[in-house]
Amino acid sequence: MTFSGEFLAFISLALVAIVGGVLLLNLTKVVHMVLALVFTFVSIAGIFILLSAEFLAAVQILIYSGAITIIMLFGIMLTRHNDTNEPKTGRLRKLLLFLGILGFAFAFYIGIYNLDFGEASTTLHENNTEQIGIALYSKYIIPFELTSVLLLAALIGAIVLSKNDQEKEAKKE
Image 1: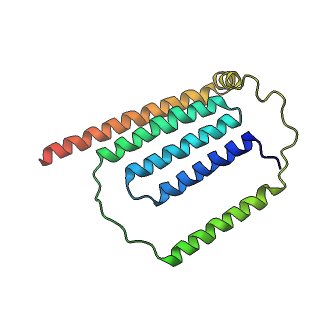
Image 2: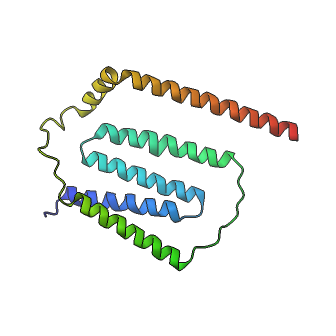
Image 3: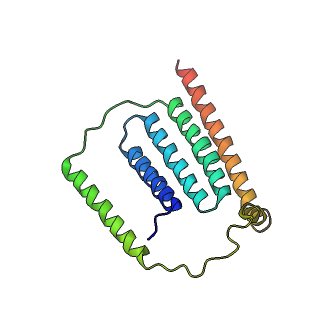
């Protein structure tokens, strides 16, 4: 195994993603959790860049790190929630969780140890964004448009539900 700059960059980005995911699960303040989620999304975008998938990295940054995180923050800020602290978990539960994580890591290692993907494509890094665009707007145009209609319907439904809740709140006061 050779230690190249690409390998070290992958290891550091993977560690940031793992630490961000663990922090997301263990932090108690919602804003800190969202910040850990952003670190995870950005490090995954960095891994996409290492894989020469610049389009996916840009989409990861724009959609997940930007839009989804902002929507989560607005959703959290605009809803009421009780700030009750849950009791801390015991040592037995933490030990079982750690053993489960080790078991999953071992199974994952066994699963990919002798994995063979075959011969790599020689045109993988050539115009990958153009290839995605051509495939998206020629072969997959119907699912693309159906997804946009579904997202529009969800947006309209969220506005209608929000408006009904605001009217009910006004009547109560």
